[in-house]
Image (tube, rainbow, N blue to C red; front, side, top):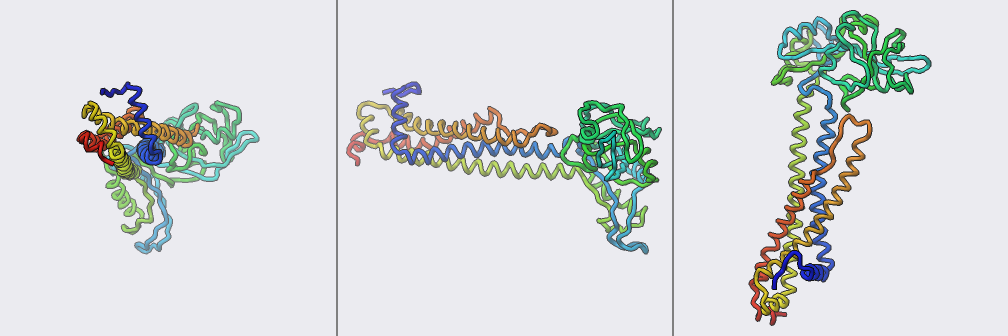
Length: 418
């Protein structure tokens, strides 16, 4: 008696055996189905979740940070707490000279609630004063035109780069407003570019809702003098900003008579540190996914082993008769293993189909047309094959012990068993 994978009668017999106890077969198959689906969804979901979090930082220099002066929270040198202080242009020049490990230090200026008008159309948003190095830290998405350049800043030109949302409100139906003149807080500015957010996190407000003009023009138009609202910085390669920022804090505090221990007087953000925390978070998520995946895998394998034990026990007489009429031990092993493998393949493929459908829905929901980048809620074909092959291999191993037991059944004992 020879059993092969192409033997039609063999597969009919396997189907009949599995159908003999529908409840047990269904529960075991569901365990495999759920284990495969869960493992596949965890792998695809972890990849998509990581892409979504990294999308929040797209367009940002990874080794960057920012400083914003706040009210003091401690009295010092005769000053009461609650004193307001400002970083100024001289501070920026001193920081540039004192910290050569920084690639650039970028002073920026901002005015919330600014008014932007073109004809009868208007919009209220943030006015930003910046130089050409602004894009070193936060790279915008360019739709048309250009950004502020050195010549604009040096000549205090009245030019403006407008956000995508501002452009859509001021120029409905116009794809390229470059060259148009808009009113910014009562002053006329020529549009030189349209930009948008390249990230879903904003250190200095959303570019979509902002208008950027040269920093020199901003200071003159708004009577800012030497005051700086926000200091951005980008460190050189291999420079640790978590070590640089405390030193910058000490230097600024000495210049402005602020208590050395007053942490609340200066708000500081370290983007590089945020990236490290994200990496640590996903290391934990990967370990959790691995633990859940292994647990579901073992549960499915144990289920296959259990049903094979029961099948062998129920078919003891049948196996004995097969042995008596000349069936070889190898044929018995193949028969029992085939039943476990068939259940694993059918249930596993169903699990993969369900996982693919769920991941497809998640991919569509989390990737709107205006997303700055794609979050890949999906698994590769090789990953799907690896998951299915792992379940089949372990399921086969789980059925090996019952198969060996079946092979050792003596024909006379089996025929006489009840």
